[in-house]
Length: 260
Length: 110
Image (cartoon, rainbow over all chains, first blue to last red; front, side, top):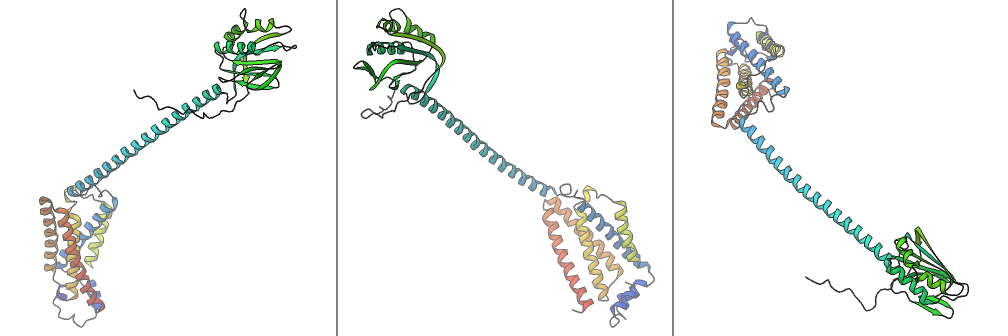
């Protein structure tokens, strides 16, 4: 880059390499100083800029206001979108939680109602506090009206589940249970039972035993029969295990709930 | 020779001093560097074509840098600084490319 090269007087045919070598080792002139200073400045600025960019401090700090504004708008738009997404998800989460709690509550309610109905209708075994009425009757003098009387007394006293057992079978006593006589034996719902009889009732045991053993009550009635003897035993835990098949009603169907 | 020396000095100064660019200068430095690169390539091309002149080089170098920075400055004032600096980079890039093509043709004769 010597000044005399710029005239192009000799360089046209001179090979490039020779010319470069000559330019490199030529005595530096005064004019070259300016060029050199500018090139040095350029190198300095280049390195500085590269370092600034590489340092990463230039990402936001050196961005223009316009760019910053657009970045900010981008970010706030995205934040808005995400926020609405969060709200959506929270709503559906609440919906699902609500639904599942309502469902499980309804399920638990239906299950407990089914259990209640099963105990009342005799399709489920039951256990709880209650009394056991044992009737010893070797001469078969106890008639059905005495047994029926005992059952009615127990019902009045709040017995929730009952069964009667004798030689011949075990019968769950429900609302439709019928008691009758067959010769000298007693039939309960068509099952012939022979003494000793064992009547189990679940309920408040004190109330139940009082209902059976008051003067002139069921126990007295049994004891009045020749050779017969009745014992009431209250117990904190008795079980009613006899079951009864539930027949679907043939004629009755649920009536629609009355509208207020 | 002295030019290479100056380049070496500039690079080592930049590395050693680790200068931080003042905030006011930050938008202009990259543009100025690109403009200077353009001037440099123009100078190399002129040298290869035997029409190199120190004075022309110095003036074109300084003018390139100043005009580029001025345009970006005006653009910043008008609110289109980003777009203007992009356009300057594009224009200077095209010029650098064409200069590089001319240099290549001179050096490799192809």
